Image (cartoon, rainbow, N blue to C red):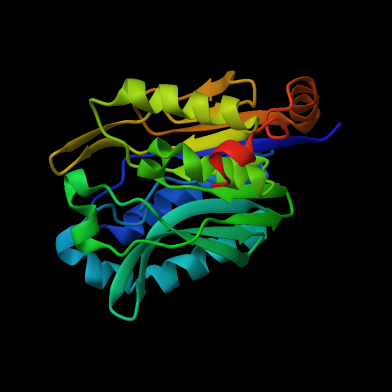
Length: 261
C-alpha cells in the first residue's frame, strides 16, 4: 500500500521582504521534513507577495531564491511546489516551480489572472496546464484563482494527476468559497488536494489561512486556522484507486456531448 506524507505550509508573507520570507519558508520546510514529509506546498508569491510597485525589482531576485530553495530541497530529500514572480523578456509571470529533491523539473504560469484586483494589469498569463511526474507521484499544478475554473482541474485529472498542488493568496471575506471549491475539486476529480494559503495582513488585504489537505473522497485530513502553521497528513493512494474503481467518473464522461477540456 502506497502512502505519502505531505505538508501544506502557511505563513504571513512580509510584503517585499524576500530574505525574511525565504528564512520562514526554509525553516518550515526543515520542520515538515523532520516529521517525514516528502512533498510540501508553499503559498502563492511566497517570496515577496503582491508588491506590485517593486515587483520588477523583486522578480530579479527569483533565480537566487530558487537556487537556495533547490539546495534546501536537495538536503531534505523533498519535493516542493510554490509560486514566485518570474521575469521573462520584460514580462512578469506568477509561476509555480516544482522542485524534486533539488532539481527544477517543471514550472507553471498562472492561467487565470484575478482582474478584480488588477492582477492582469501587472502580470502576464500562462498558456498551458501542467502535470509533472515526480519522485512522489504525478502532480497537477494550479494557483489560487485557478480554483474557480473546474475545466482546468478536469484537464489535470485526465492527464493523470494524482495530487493537485495549489499555492494561494486567497483573502477574506471569501472563506466559504475557498473551502467549498477545494473539496469540490477533490471529489469531482477523485484526487488529493494540497492547498497552501497565506495568512495575516498584506497592505489592504486580510488573508484567512485555512490551508488544507483533502482526500479524493472530499475528507479534510487537516485544515489550518489563521496563523503561521504547517499541516501534515498521509495520503493513501490505495484509497484513491479503490474509490475510482467504485465510481468510475472519468470513464463515464460523455465527450461526445460536451467535448474534452
